[in-house]
Amino acid sequence: MKKVVFFTHGKVNPYEESGMSRVVYYRAKYLKQFGVDVEILSVWDRIKKPTDFVRDEFVTVKLFPRIFPSSEITGHPLLQYIKENASNIGIVDFHLMWFYDKIPVARLLKKLNIPYVVSTHGAYTQDRLKLKKFKKVPSFLIYERPFLNSANGLIAQTPEELTELRNLGVSSPIYLSSIGIDPKEIELGPSSLSFNPNKIKLAWVGNITPVKNLHNLIRAVGIMENDKRSKLELYLIGPQNRDKKYFTFLKELVSYYKLEGTVMFLGPLYRKEKFSLLKEMDGYIHVSTSETISLAALEAMAVGKPLIISRTSEVAYLYKYSFFIMVEPWYDHIKWGIETFMNLKEEERKAMGETARKVAHELFKWEKVVKEYLNILKNVGNFE
Image 1 (cartoon, one colour):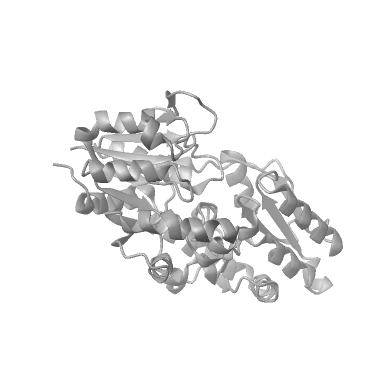
Image 2: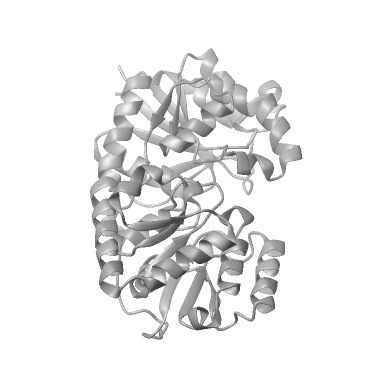
């Protein structure tokens, strides 16, 4: 069988907030366990010459300098590497939205008759296009959409994402393959924090950026009646330096609504620390304006936590399982969702959490997900 090659950016750290890195890592890990030859090629801003980075026993990343438009004329070590190894490549899976670097690679693959797919990671939703729209809209029209339409297939995470792509004029075949969780990675222990047992505790985990819609979440808490708000604690977990202007704005909102004892920014937590905190929560909240269900939400489900989640997180296909309260991504409806959650009896929340655990472990285990993903690659690629 020929190689499955992933093309991405960075060192593919499965424990950071980047969902894209975690998807690449776990797809590569489990494909290898299924006997598939896998290679990860990645561009990284911090190197000047190619180097191998050994992540662990499962994953090694071949790092290359960034690729710029002139690379097709002057040559680039990554393009040369692909030419030299073309006969061993069965398919390339791109995880590199909004980076020009992929365009010379995609052109070369077409010349070499090597099929490629694109894992889109919810990156082309209308709200994402509106962010930095004076840059993204021209980029989408000039090179992103042609790149997508030249692909042998796209891999979307949800049916809703498929619809978004079609509405943007994408004509390539679209396949569905969800993100996943690895039960072996869930380490539970006592949390280093203490919590008030008389309060309803909600957590959110991720990168603190505008698309996560934390401003509407904080406003929702801010307009709650005092008797409700006094019974709530909200923990926001994630690095605070990705968008410093936005983080400052959120802190100002907390101050404006006098929520210092209700909304807490904890900074990033990883692995055992993160899971130990999630275990102590009553629920998990995810109210993004445009995003597929997050890996952090799946992790909360895996430890038995019910969700409050926005419809725009593309979870309608999971509604029948009844483990979440679905809200619109606006502060007034988020407020309704939180209050509805707080009004549930403890046994009702626990029942929802147990359902969430079953859904996570039965539908979203990486081992199951990657088997389905491999069937997509075999349908599209050239492994003979």
